[in-house]
Length: 378
Figure 1 (cartoon, rainbow, N blue to C red):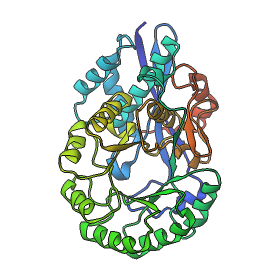
Figure 2: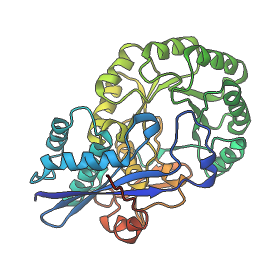
Figure 3: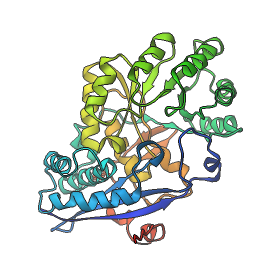
């Protein structure tokens, strides 16, 4: 079997109204546009993937991904689709440092395709199932009534929350104070600043929270300072009892090694969509495990296709603290008609169906066509 073509369609997903009032620090587009990737073969089997975007953090957009796929697919035509490692090496040769979202979308589609060819779920390709399910975090809406949204999510069984911070010290402390009584000692609250704070600001906020957060409550400081400020992360980590999570600055194994070498974090957030695919993310997980550093398997503005790939990797990983696969539930609707990751009482799981367990028929036709975004260039 050989790869004959790789096609890509930009699709739009609208966040629910409460998420349009978001006051997170980084610039967030009013609409989310990701790219559905399909890898075609000469025997008619099609693998489906998704390239997810967060322009405010990583700079990539749907148009850049569409161009990246046009570039990368030149080297993949005629390749045996089961040669996943070779495919990743070819993509890195064609684009050594860029087009990360495009690489991730193709890599996800190749894993889906390989699973369909072999009649096995993706998690089986990754070493087999370790967990029956993995807890997933979810993001409450960041606005004045966030506590009500978080309480609603707790009623649905979620126990891990990624709360976005604004960069405004008073506003952020007020948000945290409103949430602490809601979570009590039953949940974990990750304060995701996405680089919003300076080192001194983070130390001030941590000092205030040291006095207000009980020892029974679980609070994490996630990426409080600039992505490449590993020394700043280490300084914060040494000054507070709250675990520090490194996130935005980890795009390569070299980045992860810097976090480890500088003792910059207690936890690392590893994301398929940010590092270039399932295979590269699993490599980073192995590095984290070898150094005995805690990790989560996380998401970036993902619809259900990419969320499902993350869930497969999470259930096949030795010991993730939790995962992040609930972003698709924050949209008005998702392009996947059936199949894929399920979330029950805050626990994410995947089926035993081949590949991602979605099937190309679920993301073709009217669902994609009705949300397709066309780009025209002068």
